[in-house]
Length: 255
Ligand SMILES: Cc1cc2nc3c(=O)[nH]c(=O)nc-3n(C[C@H](O)[C@H](O)[C@H](O)COP(=O)(O)O)c2cc1C
Image (cartoon, rainbow, N blue to C red; front, top):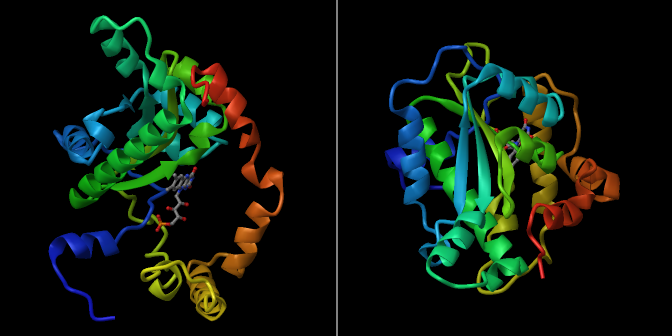
């Protein structure tokens, strides 16, 4: 496909997750540049309903690595960011403005909105870090036990760490090329949703994804098989099927 070319697009298309880091600290100002980029992202009604906890302390990173399913790079990367859906600040502000209730925060819509905004912020930070030559990987494993994470990070009610992020200098041997994605003939729908002819391009993607696996020395596997094994049964959620109850306990009634 003949796409336009510029430095921003080149950086976007070169994205890859990094799971092996040097121990070197981040360059001065890198964290702040990442967070400035996050803050520059669009945010629903300008509510700015997220927070981020920057964790450099080795013992805390090791604990978060355990809580994230033993993902060693959480302990290895010099910086770990916990991206937090933060409705608590909105509640405090509303109270200080003299309102006796913060009714809107009880609804699923508020949670959904804040989750979207948190993801937008986090991804802006990824791009900023990558522009500085740093590597990142998101850590969804941080949702394995959100209550324990809340306790480690001192999170108040009406907040939840929805995703983590390792940040650091990629190690020389940081494996992983650029992972292929589904083609636009699958993900791009023009005017109306149309899945009539998706099977063939998805099969083509299976072949590309498998070739990538083999290049990386990983077991040969069809991508669709991986999808199905994650989706077919509740256990594919890795124990996170209880999320609604967990969120309720963390102060999100999700009405
Ligand atoms: C919300 C989210 C959570 C993720 N959680 C993890 C994780 O816990 N551990 C991990 O190694 N990678 C995690 N990833 C990284 C994905 O596996 C990775 O982005 C995907 O395989 C595509 O590879 P790429 O980023 O190298 O292009 C996560 C990505 C996202 C967006």
